Length: 373
Image (cartoon, rainbow, N blue to C red; front, side, top):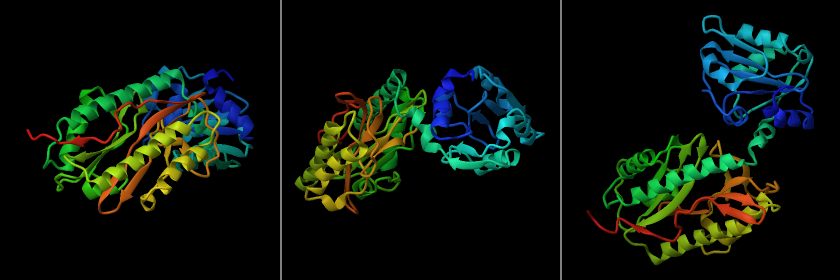
């Protein structure tokens, strides 16, 4: 075994009694090899057996980029006109110990059926299992370089949000505000988008995953929610802030302050050694013990990194122990359907003494569009 960067995979093979795992382009691939490829109709698969060197099956048009991996194992490339069948067969011939192997782990949330079928054809004795969580666990603890990439993505996002808020005016549509946000994200240096942003006003803000509308113009008293993030070097920010347009009712102020208390509680109780369950339980109790308990909809948060949603899931029932270096969101929300929604989301990294909050955008209730230009 000559690939030191694959040591976490060899460890999981041994721990889970797996004969091999198969990796396809995606976040786990990028974490292992520092670059990624498109997941497309041409299969690119890396087989990592527990007793010999890894083997790669690569479309010929990707070989120029693949060579930069300095991959330490046989590589079988295939041209479009011949198809990938012979490359898979050649890879199997190179791994005779796997011809009778049974336990293959797959990234079941990432690999497509046709890639599994190609593997099954050349390893007819294989029994495939879902090892997605085990493989993805290599990304649970972030390196210092990964934290710096996340900080950069967050800094770009927060700068873009402030510039956007300064341009919000009464009568703009959600789509117009979304367009301003997108412009500012790229103007401030984003490589790409973590996900399609959510810009939702009024009753639309009560839909946790709303889409911006062309035909709704913001008006006084509306909640205005932004859930968005820049991507930087493959790493993703995920930030939510909720504002009110020109003025806010006392009822909506209390609604907002309840979510803010829950957000603060989540950060207070998060630390190495506690569990994801305990963090969510404490956050949910703030909401449950308020006058707005009926408007809860979701868990506290999720892991963040190369994927916008990854482990650990911060929710009741998840007994995963938090460890220093884990990154996740703290994003409690309340949603009065047909009226108003509030969500406040921060990105945090676990330390031995608590968490470092990577997001710094103010959380106090803020009015926007307070002047008309």
